[in-house]
Image (cartoon, rainbow, N blue to C red; front, side):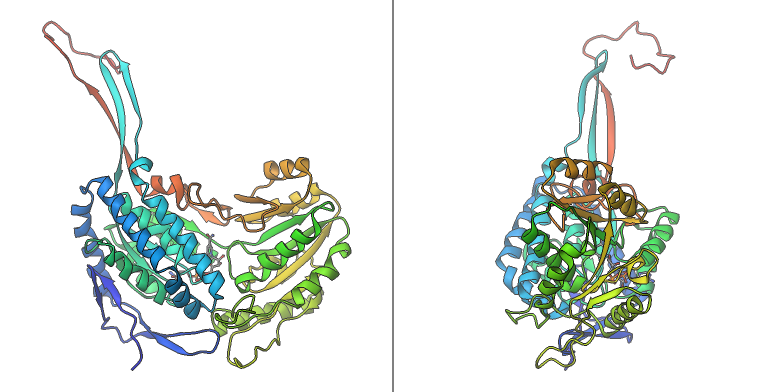
Amino acid sequence: MTHQVPLFINGAFVQSSSTEKLPVTNPANQELLGEVPFATHDEVEIAIVAAKQAFMIWKDVPVSERARLMMRYCYLLKEHHDELGELLARDTGKTFEDAKGEVWRGIEVVEQAANAPSSMMGETVENVADGIDTYSYIQPIGVYAGITPFNFPAMIPLWMYPLAIACGNTFVLKPSEQDPLTPVRLAELFLEAGAPKGLLNIVHGGPQQVDQLLQHPDIKGVSFVGSTRVGEHIYTTGTAAGKRVQCMLGAKNHMVIMPDADRNSTLNALVGASVGAAGQRCMAISVAVFVGDPKVWISELADRMAVVRPGAWDDAGAAYGPIISKAARERVLDLIARGKEEGATCLLDGSDVVVDGLPDGNWVGPTLFADVTTDMSIYKEEIFGPVLCCIGVETLDEAIELINKLEVGNGTSIFTQSGGAARKYQHEILVGQVGINVPIPVPLPMFSFTGWRGSFRGDVHAYGKQAVRFYTETKTITAKWTHGDSTGKRPNMSINLR
Ligand code: NAD
């Protein structure tokens, strides 16, 4: 019988009564892994009620106890690291190495959540006026919702609920319906770590379930990661309903290659960052901007990309896996075709790639375009496939101008041996995450994930100290304790503290 992916409500894994379901498949061979139900209106409501009731108790659990739960969770996640990697690899098609890497990056955020007692420290100033002290506390707010994309089914949920819960909130997660198996396993381990019921709840679904969360008065804030189109809707709807909303959105990340860049590490970085995970990373490099003559680089780049091949998760020789769905693959192939029609030079075309023994996989081979111009579809759209576009410019200033004109600003990198060029670039570029000789500069969680401009909607970013602010409210207390007799003191008729 087909495995029915359960909902996770009030500490129990329950079967949805919904008749609306989607198959969950391994994108390397279309093997049916299960069916994901789209939770009914009542089931979403019950999940929110469970989270609200749990909040009334959890908010008063000492912060050190909340942190200990995260420590135990962290320990369990590490113990199950390889098992989670395998499940994630089957569900997404990622290679085992990449899947384990993703799980690890999620664990690092849980480590930071276990640091909640320090992260939640307020501020104090003694004697702000005569005998008066002011201090602030950081307090949780209530039930948060998280809506996550397909491309990091472990890491991105782990960006959200561990920290929100460590701060004293409770959570309803709506993971991607395309690969829901890993989030459910993460919830099982959370329960095993000793999480009280109702802290974390998972409902599956699509737009309808998301809209119910966005409209519900008991959801106080929403963390969203996904495409720009959906994120704009979530930001507008969520904020109109009076909620805090942070949305991490789509991207088009450029890597600038200076003429003095170290040849081998630059070419390796271009291949890994554009084709890795089949280009399905929001921080993937999709445009190479060569300062000077691109020809110096491009033929060797094509040679190096040509030997990289996709394959199944457990194929040790595969560099990356399939595209998540047949529809997403069709979209990538369509963009490749448009690139050719619109006049770019296709030096490497992965449209017809085959993988031995896996004829039904959603494969796209490494694809390289030269002579790309900014009016082409392959330049303007986020392709989310293993496709790299090359552009040549005369100067670093021109490269900066090109990138600063984009609507999005998630990530970028510069490869150079010149400290001066790197310093100028990091200072002038209007992109929130900059790598210097590092192609995919996703910050570790002592920092935050700081996409800019069209890659972000909201005020404070994901994980790190900024997310502690997102998941809490600051209460500032001004206190006066008199010692001795106050007889004879007169009313204070001014706004000044006395
Ligand atoms: P998506 O926007 O299609 O889906 C994201 C989530 O939104 C899913 O849970 C989905 O069920 C839900 N959703 C889909 N349509 C909806 C609608 N009409 N109304 C309400 N909810 C809806 O994104 P995806 O294809 O899963 O992920 C890829 C996208 O995510 C890319 O654009 C990528 O750049 C972006 N992304 C951004 C970051 C970042 O940090 N900036 C990280 C990872 C992925």
